Amino acid sequence: MAEFKILLEHISEIEGLLDQASAPPSTADPFSPLAPLDAAHRALSEAQGRVEVFEHRAREKDPDRKVYGPKMAERVLEMASRFAAAVEHADELDERLAPLKQQQADALDVERSRREEAAEAAATAAREAAAAAAAARELAGREAAAGQAAAEREERERVAERQRLIAEGAAGIDPRRGAAPAPKAGLSLLEAETMLRANCTAAEHRAALQALHLIGSNAVAHPEEQHFRSVRLLNETFQDTIARHPGGVEVRICMCSCIYVNICMYISVNPL
Image (cartoon, rainbow, N blue to C red; front, side, top):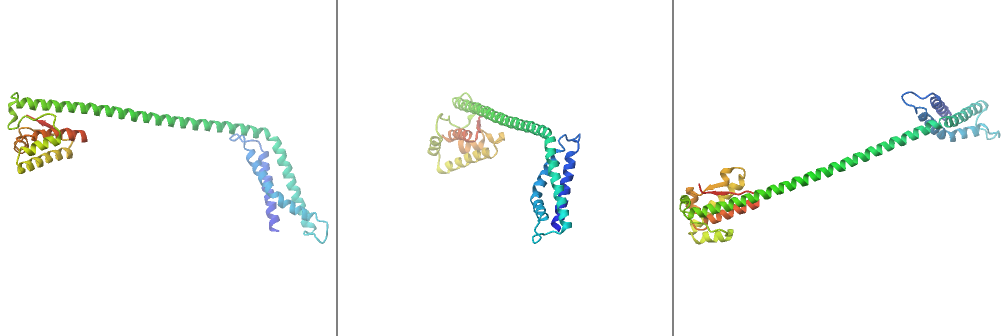
């Protein structure tokens, strides 16, 4: 009768839970009786079917259908009586602890509302923080764009001023131009290169393009170094390979503009 023994132990556990539910609430947890009462109800529900089977067998009157002897039947009925008393005790505790259950339900509602409000506040704060971050990024982008536009205007003004100074030097205001002819303003890179090609031999044209390529590649490779961002107009190599040919300075000026527009850097032509 291992099953009967297990059922007796189960009823003993139920009675223990009901004793806990009958005890006064603890100071740490005013709702302490409710958890064992709920556990007792679950255990009673689980055991009820098996108890009814045992009780039905113990009350069998037909001698041919009896399963238990007199002593076993008496033990089973005693177990059924204990189970019935536990059910009655649980119902009494339900009635007595009903106000406490309501208090617990109200407290849980308050706590749930508090958590929902806290979650909503956190979500609102997160949305506001995201919006502030987006606004800050947008402002930084506008400031960067404005700064870039101002830098571009400044560089264009410097280019125009440099071209004016070069032209004035060719007219006699600055006699230190060496052999460089006065550059023509407003030429495109293609027009300037065509002029250079027309005014030098094939070897001189090739040497000029190589020198121009070296100057431009150095500027691109070292954008932060001023040494590579400018070239002296009276530099001997610059004069021999580029400046002395009509169109050479014009190509250099166009390269300055192209490099600045594409990589935001200007390589100045320094006449000093």
